[in-house]
Image (cartoon, rainbow, N blue to C red; front, side, top):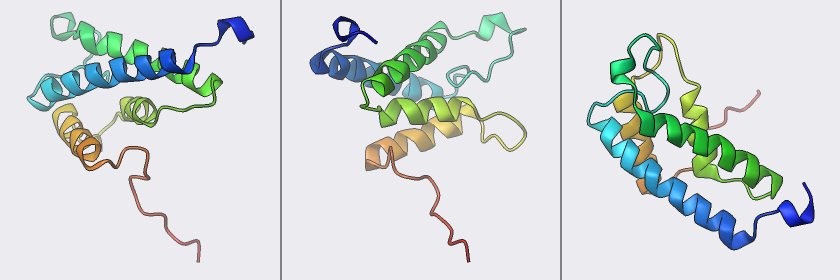
Length: 121
C-alpha cells in the first residue's frame, strides 16, 4: 500500500464507528428474529434477503482488510466476520447468536477469547 493510499487514523476510527453503529442496529433486529445478518438465509429464499445484512458483511470485509493493513485490527469487525462463518447443525441460530454477541459487546468482552484456553497437559 502506498503512503498516499493509507487512511488517516481519524478516518479509520470513523469507519470503525460507522461499522459499530450499523452492526448494533442490525444485531438488535436480528435478535428480534430477523434472519440473514450472518449469511444464514439460503439463496433460494430471496424474499427473506436482508440487504442491510449483506452490506454490513461487505463493509466488515473491507474494514478488516484496511485495518489489518494499517496494523490496527478491529476486534468487533473480526469477531463479527468469525461469527459469519458459523454454519451447520451445531449453529445456535441467528437470533440467539445476535443476542449472545450483543451481550458480549455490552460486557466489553469483544476481542477476548470466547472460551477459556485449556492447558495442554
